[in-house]
Amino acid sequence: MAHINPRSFSVLRNLTTLLLDFNFIQQTLNGKEFEGLGQIQEIHLSNNHWKIQLSSASFINVPNLRVLTLGKSLNSTTLNLDPSPFQPLSNLTYLDLSNNNIANIRESMLKGLGNLKVLKLQHNNLARLWKDANPGGPVLYLKGAEMLTTLWMDNNGLDEIPQEALRGLTNLRELSLSNNLLDSLKDSVFDDLKSLQILRLQKNMITAVKPEVFRTPMRKLSLLVMDKNPFDCTDNTPFYALYLLSSTTVLMLMVTALLVRFHGWRIQFYWNVLVSRTLGFSDASVEEGREFEFDAYIIHAERDTRWVEREMVPLENENCKFYLEDRDAVAGVSVLQSIMENMKRSRKIVFVVTESLLRDPWCRQFKAQQALHQVIEASRDSVVLVFLQDVHDYKLSRTLYLRRGMLRPCCILDWPEDKERVPAFRQKLLIALGMTNRFRD
Image 1 (cartoon, rainbow, N blue to C red):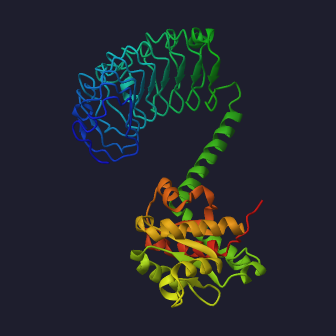
Image 2: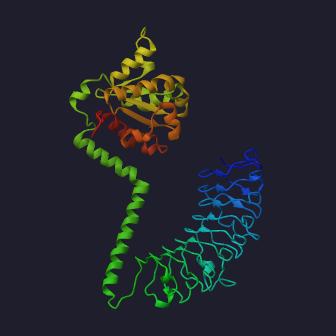
Image 3: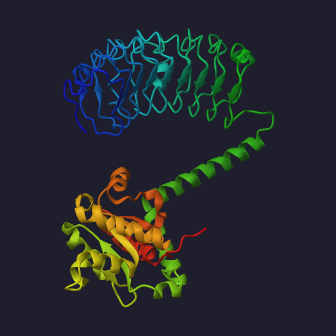
C-alpha cells in the first residue's frame, strides 16, 4: 500500500488497533486519513521506508490514541513543526520515533503528552540539538513528558548532555544512552532521576566518572551497564593494546560483513563448486537412486512453461532426468493416474512457485495433495520449492499445504534477478535434487 485515502477506515468505528507496518506509504498525513476512528487506541506505521510526512493535524481525529509507532517511516524533517503533530494525543503512552535519521526537533514536540510513558528515539541524528554550541542553545525537547518511565536514545551520536536535558523526569525508570560518543558527564545531569532503576551507557567514550554523577540514581539503581568504554586507569598500556585489538576485530568484522553482504553468493558458489568436485552433488545412496526413474517431477503453471523449458530442461543429461507433463505424459493414460504413478517414480517433486501456480485449480486441489501424500506415506524429504516470485508463507500454506519451515534450507531456492547469479542458482538446484530423501534424526 502506497497511499491512505481520506476516511479509508471510517466504517470501522469500533476498531481499536490499526496495523500498517511494512508498507510503502508515501504521503503527508493531514488527519483526514483517520477520520471516523474514534475508538482507535493503537496505530502502527513502522517500516514504511522514510516516506511519511506529518502535519500539525495528522492525528487530530484520534485523540484516544495510546500507542503510536513510526519507526523507520518518517521523512527526517517532518518533526520540525509548530504546533507538534502529537499535541492532540493527550492520552498517548507509547511513542516510537526510532530509525528515522531525525536531526531537527522543536522544543515543543512533546507538549501536551502528559501521559507518555515510553519514548523510543534510538538511531536518529540528535547530537547537534543537545550541544551548547547549537545556535540558540540546546533544544530541551523532553519538556512536557514528565511521566516518562522509559527513554531510549541509543545510536544518536550524542557527545554531551545539557545540564537541564533530563530535568523533571522524576518517574523515569529506564534510560538507555548506549552507542553514543559521550566522553564526560556533568555532575548534576542525573539529579532528577530519582526513580531510575536501569541505566545503559555502554559503548561510549567515557574515560572517568565523578561520584557526584551517580549520587541520585544510585539510590534505586538495580542495573548499570558501562562496558566497552575506554576507562582511563593508571596504566595505559593494557588499554592501548585492548583498543588496538578491538579496533582490528571491528574492522575485520566490518570487512567480513561487507563481503558476505555483497559477495556472499559468490563465496557460496565457489564453495559449492569445491565441495561438489570433491564429493559430488548428491548425498543420496546408490540404492536410493535406483528406486526412481526420474530425478524430479516438475510442477508448474501453464504460463511458466517457457521458463521451465529455458532454465530447467537444459540441466537434463545422462545423470539427471525430469518428468514434464506436457512432454512425457503417455497417451491413453488418465491424467490422475499419470500424476500419481510418475510422482512415485520421481526422487524429487519440484514446485515452480508463482502466483499463477497458486491459482491453478489442478495444483491446489490434486497435485499439491498428492505430493504431500507421497512425502508422508514414504517418509521422504522430497519437496523442492523454486520461487520465481515473492510469495507469502500464508498463501503457500493455504494453497499448497506447505511452509518454508517444513523444508531444509537447501531445498528452498529463489530465482535471482541478477543474471550473473543464474549459474549459482543452477548449481544450488542440482545440489537440492541430489540430496537424500530420507529424513535424518
